[in-house]
Image 1 (cartoon, one colour):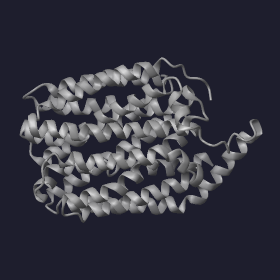
Image 2 (cartoon, one colour):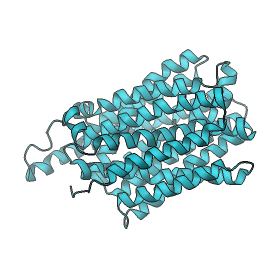
Image 3 (cartoon, helix red, strand yellow):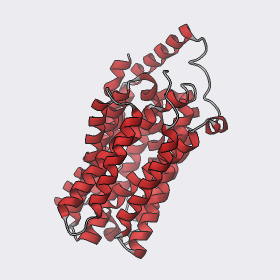
Length: 395
């Protein structure tokens, strides 16, 4: 039954990524058309992230009561409605209002699917699934760039993505019986080995946080997602303001960052058959710093483009490897709560860094973009070092 669910989860990961980069890829046009400050993207991103923090924080309880299938369907449907709302927005206030349901939906589905895959599938599947997230997040900016080039406007880009998201939500609704059957199988199997394990309530939040290494793990997710989100949100705008690239070309080139993430996760999925999550994370960090240094080289567009690709490839294995190793590092019964906390802190990073970088870009200099990338990378290495010291144990 779990093998039947795999294509459905692949599709869900595409839906998770589809809208993630729309704001960044279209912002260089959106803020001008709405006549609002350029740094307003940080505010919108912050509201979205606050919603994801809240839903991720309570995801353990929600999933315990609704189960993974229903939680995933409701979350994707909620994001579809919110994206349609973005397409109809004509002011900053409307963008901010629709950001609330979008954030709540995105956080719940993220925590639900990541824990489900970490418990029931091999590490290679986690990387391939996040590769599909990268596919979704690469398609979004491409749709936006086509909408801008065709002159139909950024709102049509959002509208097209909302239609795709609605279609995925419908397919998830139709698959609910499959999810329910898989849940029954899951409850039956553990009962043969350890009665009552499947029905055990999630571990408490304070107990989870006190577990050795969990705080460092949460901070690792925080700075990683701060780096990824700020690169995706401000990359295109930085190209326009600092390097003089046209908005249409900048949107396409910035999407190479997400294509790099997709490629990185596909390659790390293959490598996971031979390499441990620890090795994958260290390799990714080496490639990541190489990409940032290439972005910092001035006056050479080719190195800038290559830098965004390598930064994405380097990011590729870090997130899925950290998630998949959570149950084996911290225990199976603790994994849903801890992954929920990791997702919550991940979105704290997504919440805090984009507006900080937006203020720096607008008030100080766009040239600070790669410098802040470098600072975040240093924090990522620092916190992840403490997590990787904890040995993994067989589930």
